[in-house]
Amino acid sequence: MTYGGYSESIVVKEHFVFSVPSNLNLAGAAPLLCAGITTYSPMRHWGVTKGKKVGVVGLGGLGHMAVKFAHALGAHTVVFTTSPNKKDDALSLGADEVVLSRDADQMNNHAGSFDFILDAVSAEHDVNAYIQLLSSDGNITLVGGVDKPHAVSAFGLLFKRRSISGSLIGSIAETQEMLDFCGKHNITADVEVIPIQKVNEAYERLLKSDVKYRFSIDMKSLKSS
Amino acid sequence: MSTTQLDSKSYGQYNAKAYSAGSPTSPLAPTIIARRDPGEHDVRLEILFCGICHSDLHQIRNEWSVMPTVYPCIPGHEIIGRVTHVGSAVTKFKPGDIAAVGCLVDSDGSCPECQAGLEQFCPNMILTYNSPDAHLGA
Image (cartoon, rainbow over all chains, first blue to last red; front, side, top):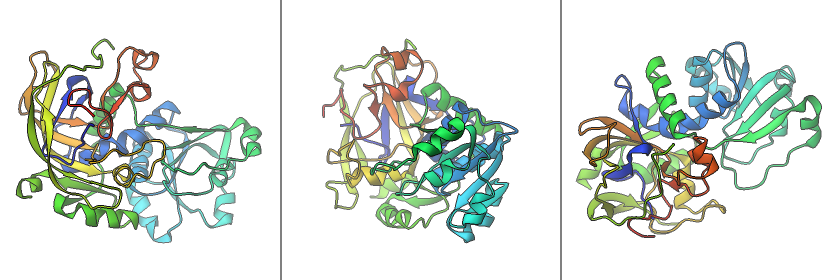
């Protein structure tokens, strides 16, 4: 079987290897290769740009990258969260507004107004609450790997010809484009650097969302294992 | 998109330190794995940083019914490294360069998706971990 990056080295066909802009912090650049491209690709596909209203659901590893990209692409960026204490963090990442998703009044104020929503939640949740916030031809793209099937209201989609999609990472060319975009805008993930000896502890913290926003393993720690 | 063809040649190999999971319930622990020696189109990286993705945790705990885990499992697909070796046909990289690897390490290059430059939808794509390894065996 193929073996991943929790290792001191790897051998990969050139076509699947990317150049990294020299201005980027390397620990923070690592998460661009999954969290970054997974959020960048659907935004490019669905035309996120200046003048669009874009929502981001879930402010974790993927969500925080989505906020940075939506902001850098010039969109009006709205973060949905269940935690009031994430508001300041969301604003400092580049959000223009923060909506508490458990507050029905706040949600209703945004009904039918979004061009695009990126749903980066990997736990079970109700996507219909977000579908009703989409404008005509608006799209919500799921990037969270929720194993249990979602229940989706047909009428929520029929009205306003809304759509729901998935997206999986991005192409090789688009990944290089994303890295170059990050170089130009000096975008990296916010990371907590850990030695590999703390990886199991990091998993437990990840399950509690106790990281802002991604762990990055300093692989030179592996030399002493 | 003419550069890739699923390559099933066998190569020499070397040992590398890694962290692996042996079962859905065991913690990650140090191990030694075999890596292939770089072929003419290959780049070998010394890994400097690897991000922790929630996918890593899902995979080592075998939580995705569509992608069952084969153990031992060595996760990690957010890779930044320094190039240490390049094959004779490599043109974009040289030793010392900073480079990156993501979730894919190969695709067939011939399917409609690959021809359209959408390797991430190739039915025969090879993921960075937990995919069959054509070089060193499954």
